[in-house]
Length: 292
Length: 133
Image (tube, rainbow over all chains, first blue to last red; front, top):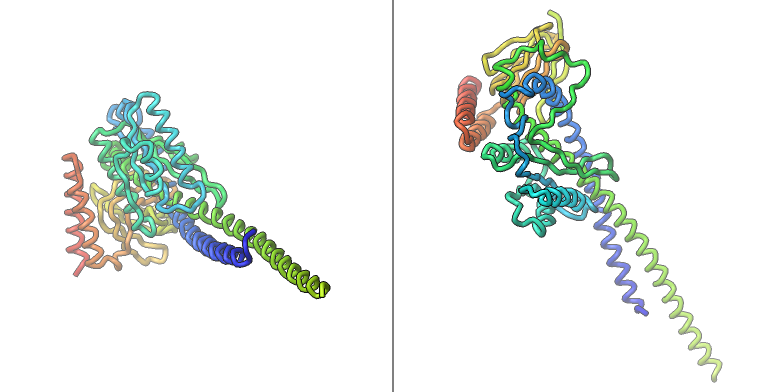
């Protein structure tokens, strides 16, 4: 039976924890709003780029001049997995669900006898994956110093992916991140970026035959594709940022609620034992008086 | 003159969307002006100044760091890597652009990549001398 003092200490400590989780929840909510706004702001560019890519790829696809980023290397031996996670924990299953998806994919590929290379973006994913795939991790991109993700950050990652591709280090590249649906729903997603998957052509777009290209299709496409990779990394990072904050918000919300429940339980226990002590003392006094 | 729809987007945001009379874009093969009912064209852009004239006849100039333009029957879309109003292009902003272009040049692997990066750096340097006084 814990003493009254123990109980009191326990309650104070849970209350302090509750204050922290509550504050973290509110900070996450504010950051989420910002992350969501920047994810939305990036959408028009991605949409227009997709439309343009769909248009132009149609006229180049299948021809021998199609760039390798679109057509692939013709092989399927070495896979590069780019795993984007958060830099910080305390956000529920967010990091582990992305890492799990990447891990399953890596294991499946290794079982097929393929070579797997991993680039980790974000510390948490690196921590989770390095236990199993220490040999496979070839790069770790640290974004801890970055407060708000800008296109430059994504462009750097995109450029390093392309440099590796040009050096013939991999054949297929897949991007892992978490798609943001709502505060309580985030979907870990795997997206193949090399060779590029050409988006469906939106309806109402003029046939590409009517277009004139300057300098020419192939040249535009070969500068458009690397751009598109950077853009896909950028939107993945933005979606990730929104998902992370959303996940943290709901995780901290339930932590706050749990702390509340615990405080309630402990308070009842505290009051009961206080009452019991008083009763005991009274009984002692009364029985002492009666004995006289 | 008749107005048509124009959109200028950078990865971070939609910079401009509205009706304009005329747009002059810095294509890799040379600047060209787009008016209403222009034939469909798709072109790569070099770092340079894009200017557009809105319906009231007021003209705006924006620095863009390369990108693509898509002139379709209905809308003119410019995908810029970065778009900064010319008024905000200070010496420091140019220095940052030059820095970035130099790092890209240093990082280029293939001869083709090196040629492109060197070309871009030269274009930015040229712009700097015309815009900053």
